[in-house]
Length: 561
Image 1: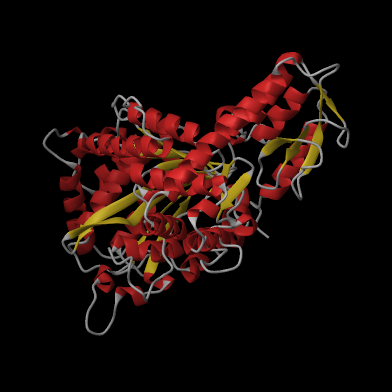
Image 2: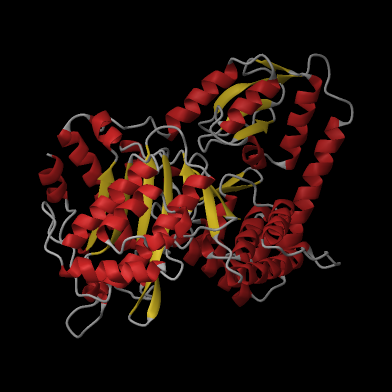
């Protein structure tokens, strides 16, 4: 068992529930339950509440309501297995939920609360019903196209877990009702299968809101936009506010709603949001994402200022001065591409570095080791294809037949991390595990990277990443991250031009910490700068027929065992 193994999500939820039950006040209990004892930002966590639940909680906090023992009559606070806190009426506690306690109003509920809650519920349900009626008026072929588009997206992306009212929509493990790794389309329990064969007028209004909401998100940006509603309510009011806020981040003023139905309004917002994003991209905006692994919530932001070679840590500059053209960073006429081109020329002409199969492999490992030290990262790593020539189709072989062994991942440890593990065999096993997972990722992204996503030989693939991201608490749901303590991480996808086209996510650069502190925006900017430099080096090396043979499981054993 790995020394880095963490307890995982179920134990985190149970521990938060135990602590929440000990509170004297309902507001204190709710704060602990909503944030899973401080692991989620409150502003994100409360968006998992329905509008009526939010009203009840605000009233309870304002009235200083106490927390009575579970089982008494009244509004019950519960924590569900997905990590969502709910406020439910008597007798409607969801299965397998942790009972936290009952709101003790210490007399009577505030005057007017019942009417406000009923009004909020009516407003939400009217909006959802309006969405269903609008969808039902569309041609059946158009509805089928939307369902198929959502299926295509969720089958080829990281886990989705979001809410509409009391309902859960997910393709994650035991919560699955959407197609993905855990549930195939066509299997019993697959919601999209059932909806595809049912008239819209017979859909639950929540299901209609999910379909239209997911479709709107797909209209507004890249497919992974759906993940930005992980852990929160995908209802019309929240969706409209989200799209307006995104447009503001892109420097665009949101339009004013006319008299159109809510679904039509959301689609207009989505189209303008997509156009604003495209204009921002053309102007050089650097899109990134922040990810919380607790509820899988992801949010895109624009990194300002962007990153340049001036953000590369000085330790790497000094290293590159030793192996490349000296003083390159201070030469106004020398570009990163110039440096990469000269490095590639030198590395392909140099003898192998001791302990490595080639000079380039030795350079890459040292580059990553220094980067890990500079960013105070336990490890840094970079993955990609071992032999670019294998990515070209010919009469004898398709790149879709490649296996995970056709890819490499170089993992370099910070000295303090190696000392933490102590035993060299444990270090070798840990680094090899990281490497193996990343080799799988390269294989998994390959159809999208090579623009062959429709190849029937490879139905199992994910969209290649295109945005840098910074993650906290990633050691909760992912089995490998739980086993090897990948708690805080930065990922910088690296694409190159190859065979006349840009290949997204062909390579990447990653940094990982098993313990605090988490990575911040400054770390992300430095990592992106290092990634831009590394991408230029990979691009320059692609002009040479090099092959990477190091960084296999056996190689890590030889080096560290």
